[in-house]
Image 1: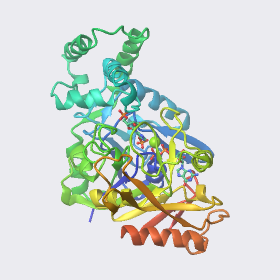
Image 2: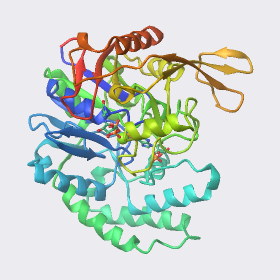
Image 3: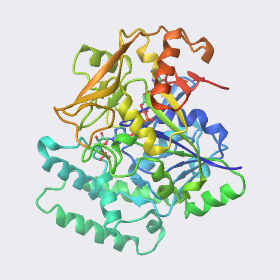
Length: 421
Ligand code: GDP
Ligand code: IMO
Ligand code: MG
């Protein structure tokens, strides 16, 4: 039976999705991105080299696999062209193995200006957006006047582009255009020429026909469940559905085609940008996690906020996504960190709660349990992991009710331990 498995983040993004997708990719015929855009930064490491992908699916280094950018994604051609160029020195000819949905939305240079202007107008309340034009592009999609990738190969594209740009400029009329706007626009049009060389098609047919002919598909999420537009800590969220449901709408897959849902989380938590973070550490422990985990954004380089593992949040994410298997990343970072803490519930004015609250404010505080740390030596087989790490794994499995099948002990493809081979 062919199937669609979904791999997605259960926290605030940057859980290690890129590494995990690259590791699993050889089991699949197609890897497909279903939402988000260049706000994502997915890191892959192998053969001593590190690669960061923003819009291109993380299966791209496997020449036998087809990679699809689905209709739910928003694409910036400038970032796209740079990513394609960055792949070339590694012998990756993406034009052979990458297909774009004609229904994915196009990010144009003015979307980025609007993103910046909106963020500036929020002052202290700013979201901490990556300023890649994500929100304004999804706004235009929902407002039903966005441009789609399919439009770039139509003769009236320039007219449509000018119309949308004019609309944006009237919104921005009180602002000066950035000095480099005209240069950005030139690069945009040059990048569109490169994009036109790729196959642009109704990828929902490709996906469903591939399934019929027995092919297996891995859907790659971007961001994380707690940044979901509906269920994240609104308004400090991204502008798409980062949950399993997003894989259905973002690729054109019927819900009953979804098989496994791989939920990926760090052994602790991080968040980049503003918004509530119940287990955040403001002390030396937080600094240590940032340093040991090298917690700096793959897209913007911003330092990530760090905190302990949050079980109520993890439970919430598993519930929303129907997670069938958990992947725990960065267990190596907690090696030698003493003590390790886990938040199992929150204190609130109504007593102890285990639900992720609608709004997190001063009336809540996390309740932590200390657990002993572990000392790692290399990448052992699952059965040879340190006892304290086994206990940590079992206690999470018990709290969440979902088995942990993969444990990641380093950024490299090979630093990965499977419970069952
Ligand atoms: P993504 O957005 O979910 O793909 O995650 P990012 O690439 O933004 O951030 C994850 C970071 O952790 C990257 O720098 C990875 O190379 C790194 N990483 C992934 N797994 C592990 C792991 O198990 N241990 C360590 N130390 N680093 C990891
Ligand atoms: P990956 O796929 C971590 C965060 C931003 C900001 C909020 C809204 O690498 O896990 P946006 O640019 O969407 O307007 O930003 O969401 N954010 C991410 N944080 N990882 C990501 O992607 C993110 N994509 C967006 O920092 O707080
Ligand atoms: Mg990332």
